[in-house]
Length: 404
Image (cartoon, rainbow, N blue to C red; front, side, top):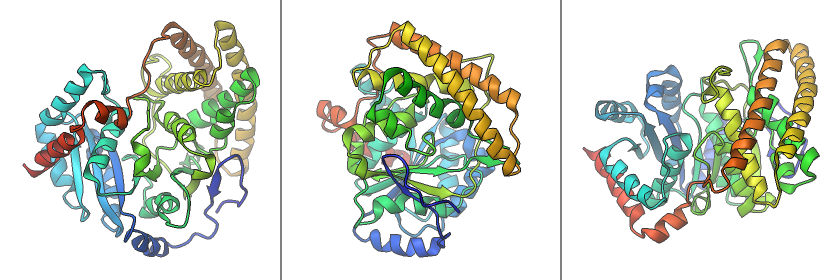
């Protein structure tokens, strides 16, 4: 049960009354008569072998208002794709699996790669980008939600609350971002959001000066949440990163394309837990260490497009201010956790902050050394401009894969 306070520059939808999911779904069924709704599930094949996704499928079987479910499947061979088709066949809704490693989809993407119009590396951003293309091609949905496939505490009211603000015909929202408290097993989680994202946003504002983008990003209670919903037309001109900067990149793109009055955040879960990444202190190409670098690079790129100039001196200042800000906030989180009967390992958290500070500086150096880097995936407007029939080809490839 959360408060009703409206903070920051975007509207916040709270969970004030624990409204029954059946009541929400009754309204969503009425909305679906004029605004078809879809769901995107970006998934690794390995997630089909975990209990979290099995529970998600069981919950989705009860959802009465979806017109389409699109599963983006990564790292699957032919046998695994056939297993996935059987696995998701229980879903009563119209659903398709995009076999990203299959020969048909690969052939289309290889052709686009030759022209610099498709991602060159696999990853969640690449998976989501392909799903966007298919949703545009299928034309089955006007509103689409997306959430991860590793949510251990999933229940269908998460989806209902997430999609409601965008699906409601009398609301004016184009985009809704989910948020929730991160704690489980007596511990406070969400280290990257708590110890890296919020402190770096405030450090950047201290060093660079006030910026509307920074104030906007700092308005989100959980900016790294992988759950959001949007009008399908917003997919056409969205440029997103292919790496761990996906969530920050999407938020920044929505801010670039729409007024803050068209963007909201919504409390979607009292309890939320999912697969946890290792900090990966020894290997900065993996885990939370890699994630922190990608997020920092995404922020530097976005701010540079707004006219901010970076130098190594600037990066040193950002690192120093970040470190002090993060340590101050750690104390607040520690006190909050203790009052709620949760534990925080101060030593481990300070180690994480020190690692993030190092990664912020290294990410900045990479940014400075690669001024011609193309960090964002082409939006689908550009792709279809170059290849007018590409969405039809993608749609046909996915249909053939699913029919065989």
